[in-house]
Length: 161
Ligand SMILES: [Zn+2]
Image (cartoon, rainbow, N blue to C red; front, side, top):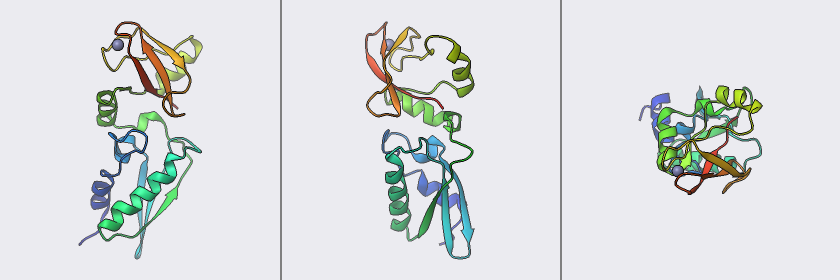
C-alpha cells in the first residue's frame, strides 16, 4: 500500500469528533498536516479548545483508525496559530446544523458583535434569528445553550473563537 497524504486524510474522515459524532475531525478542520520523516508519520493537529478533554480522545481515535489500516503514526499538537471556527468546512457546518447544533457564526462577525449585547445565532431547527442565550455552557463546555423564541426549542450553539 502506498501511504500518502491523501490516503491518510481519507482515513481521518472516519475519525469522529467525540463531542459531535456527526462531524469528522476533517470537517472540524483541526488536522493541519501529515509529516513524513522516513518511516515516521506524524499527524499534526490543532486542538479546538485548549484543555478540552475531547482532544485526548481524538488522538486515541486517530491512532486506532490508522492502526486498523496498518499505519503507525504519532500525533503532534500545534497550538499556534490557534484554531478558529473559520477552519470548519462548509460541509462541517451543514452537518452540525443537521445535528441540531447552531453552527458558529464566522469569527469576524463574532468579533464585531462583541460590542452588542447578544450574538445573532440562527436557530438550527426553524432558521429564526430570534434566539436567546440561556446559559454560557451547553451540553459541554465548548457549547452554549440557546433557546429559540419562535419554535421555543432549546439548542446548542458551537462557540466561536
Ligand atoms: Zn427555532
